[in-house]
Image 1 (cartoon, rainbow, N blue to C red):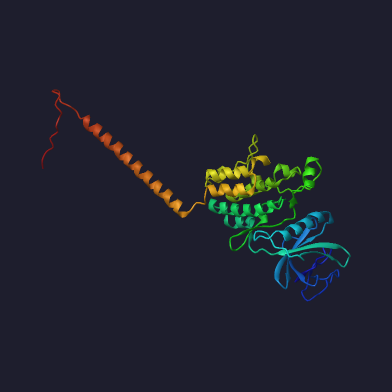
Image 2 (image 1 turned 90 degrees about the horizontal axis):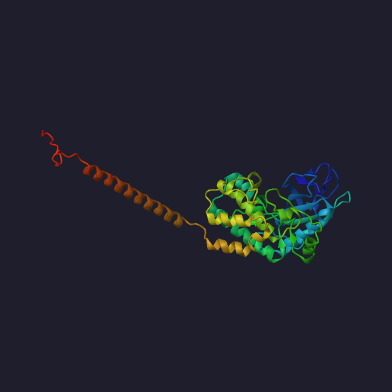
Length: 350
């Protein structure tokens, strides 16, 4: 089956053999190249975009279709960002991957075709496997930090990091997706913040920091969302379900992840600090702190077992020493005769 790209079509699912939609007359092969195979999320009139898996001569790809013109600036910015960034952790977009089409009813639709990243989102991974171990969480933090280092160096920031926007490829590498909310740290943007002018706010409950909710996002806002994502992975609980300290605004999560080492928990807390200035200055600082405490290995685990066994042996020696001392005290307290001589009990011989 194929799908009609027209969001107003009364019957979007169509037969593969057709070249035009039988319901509205719109071409089913977009730009004589792409055929829409299936929606990758529910087709919802309230959402600004539809997302489809599409087929062309190069294989399977993903197409985002903008339905609401007011989001056009953000959509164009997403296309420009993906075209200029070249990294395995970011979906690839070819130079001709952004274009517009017109439906049979005359509606103009902006389209963005990008690489289809195989694998699971970390949200799906968590639902399947449960809370992550610290070693893997450290590796994922490293990978995302390297991606953010690239993005931030180009004076961009993502603004919507969360588990559903982090894809795990079959080879084990992460990719950051959905650049629809990406923003450039330009002089115009800084002037808007300084002048208290309205800026489009992207909010994902539990992940979005207060400054971003107030329309004043900065690159360190990505770190806050990244820290919240790590908490979600390590505890298995969504950040909105965890308590927050009323006095400091800090998230009370450590009790739900007792397997996390203190140094790593402190790094995560710093990522989620209430104010941007309290968070790491840049992604390189996050990587430096990870390097300062290398990922735990099997050798380190064996060393901890040896230390535990040594401690147990020492404890047993102490117990034996105490028991020997008590036995000696009892021997010294044997009864004496009236003459002061120790009473020697004679046992009958058999």
